[in-house]
Length: 297
Image (cartoon, rainbow, N blue to C red; front, side):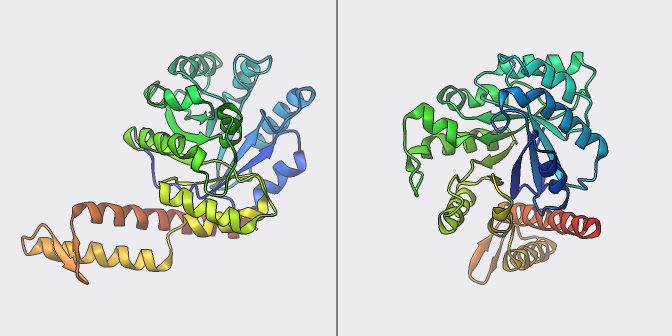
């Protein structure tokens, strides 16, 4: 499964135990939502939350937003029932927590398949433990259905005994390794959350750093951060215009039998053209999503 140009600039966690939040998700400008049954839900609310999410998915109304459901792990009392309930609920993907091996991915898929779920239902994996980081390649190769990685930097900090610093240097090895594996296997990759909701500047810097590292977008814990994530991870008007120039210049050179061209003093090769096409495809999908959200408002 190869990562597509689907926008994932802003991916908001929404607790399944809060029906009002699930309803509000239909009107937010987030590219994607993670309807959560795990960390955001207290143990005594797990069953109710599962029903809330199933009802919300059955009702629909989320438009073209990508909808993932984060289930509890199979080693918990709720994991198997979560997978069975979500197998045919209509989610766009299942997000598995604290994945540390290919075997855990295959076991979850077996439960989904036994419940009659679609055989192409995408599987996303939280990378949030040292073992998960070290086994990222094994996890990526576990099944063609593995579609993406989501960094769980809060749990990772706990496991590493490291600090949340403005530069996130304690996470760099884990972030870079996960990105490397994701790109090697054609997977999407989402950056971890920023915990300090009062630190707008820090959040913006975290988004910029995530973009520079190569992440497709940022996971979020509050709707107020959606706009900034969309701004940072989305291609700017200048990037779109430049991409069009690169493609046009290269195509003109090809008609003359040339394999490269110099544009404004900079060498343009096929690799630049491929990236320009990716940017234009992403911009087109973002425009489609925005139009869909406006129509539903």
